[in-house]
Length: 183
Image (cartoon, rainbow, N blue to C red):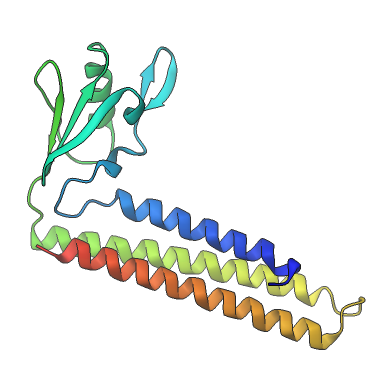
């Protein structure tokens, strides 16, 4: 891999990481503790991820149990969950919080599958924009110490890297769509 292209490949890798984290936050029919990854609670004045103030477990396929290490955190965690876009009301029994995930309806599964596709398309657009930026930078090299043949080779390599990441996006979207549509 040419040094000039490394920066673009790194940007494409970041796009994939971002897509992976977006997709892991979409819940399929089963409870996934990653839906809590983006939630923070006020812990002594600083926003702290729920996983750092409580034990998060999945005792059943459609339930997440959150046991705060300090009793006073229950209200904070409950408030954070209610204000989030998870769409599940927490059940508080005084010592722990339970999130019970309802069975997904066919309609909701289709909505989630569309959302997955949208996120995949956005990632593809980001990858293509990175390729465009790379091609623009390569075109600016014309007339410098780099020959036109070398520039063509670099453009071809950049296209191969782009194709690789587009394929990765397709695989990630297909896998998540299957997961969402599985009853």
